[in-house]
Image (tube, rainbow, N blue to C red; front, top):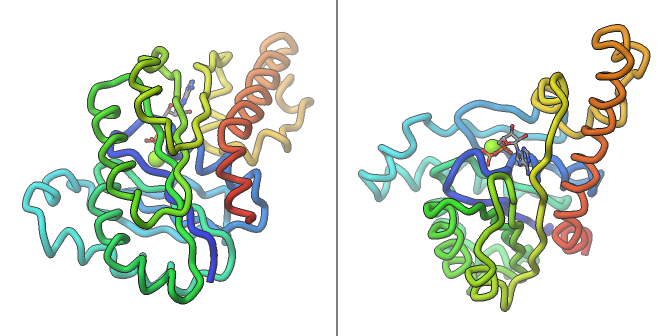
Length: 239
Ligand SMILES: Nc1ncnc2c1ncn2[C@@H]1O[C@H](COP(=O)(O)OP(=O)(O)O)[C@@H](O)[C@H]1O
Ligand SMILES: [Mg+2]
C-alpha cells in the first residue's frame, strides 16, 4: 500500500525525467520506477527499478491492443508490491496506454489502500498540449490528485490554454534554464543528486575558476527551481 505518482507526457524531451529526479530529491524515502527504452536514473542506485519498453513504442501503439498493454504486466506487479511512496517516470509514447491500463486496475488497488496521482508536464508544442489534455481527462476518475508543470523550455505555454486546464489541477512552472558549458554533462550523468556533491576543487581544475563557479551556480539554480516546481506533488507523495 502506497502513494503512487505518474510523471507523464507522451512527448519526449519535455522534462519528465528532470521532474522525476527532482521528486526523488525531495522525497528521500520514495522509490522510483523508470519505464523507458534505456535507463537514465543510474545515480539513484537501488532506489530505482527499470522496466524496458521497446524503442519502437510508437509503432507498437499504432497496432494498438493487447501486445501494447501486456508490456506493462511487470510494472503492474511492481506497483502491487510497493510499500513506499513511488515515483513513476514514464518514457515517451507510453503514458496514454499505461494510464489506460492503470484505469482498469485502479479500483482493485485503491480497495487495498493505494492512492494514485498524475503529474503531467506540458510545453508549448501542439503535441504536448494535446497529450496533456488527454492525460488529465483520462486520469480524472481514478487519480486522487492531478498536478501540471508548465515547462518553459522553449517559451511560455499560452495562458489561455493553462487557464482552461488548471481548474482541478495544481499547476506550477519551471523556467527555461541557461546552463554554462559543461553543466549539462554533469546533469545528464549524475542527475540532480550529484549537484550537492560536486567537488569545487575538482571542478576548478577541470574548467578553471570562472566557468567552474558558473557551472556550480547554474546547476544549483536548476536543482532548486526543479524542486520548487515539483513541491506540491512531493507534498502529496508524503501524504
Ligand atoms: N526548463 C528547462 N531549461 C533547460 N533545459 C531543460 C529544461 N527542462 C528540461 N531541460 C533539459 O531538456 C532535456 C530533456 O529533458 P528530460 O527530462 O530528459 O525529458 P523527458 O524525460 O521528458 O524526455 C534534458 O537535457 C533536460 O536537462
Ligand atoms: Mg525521460
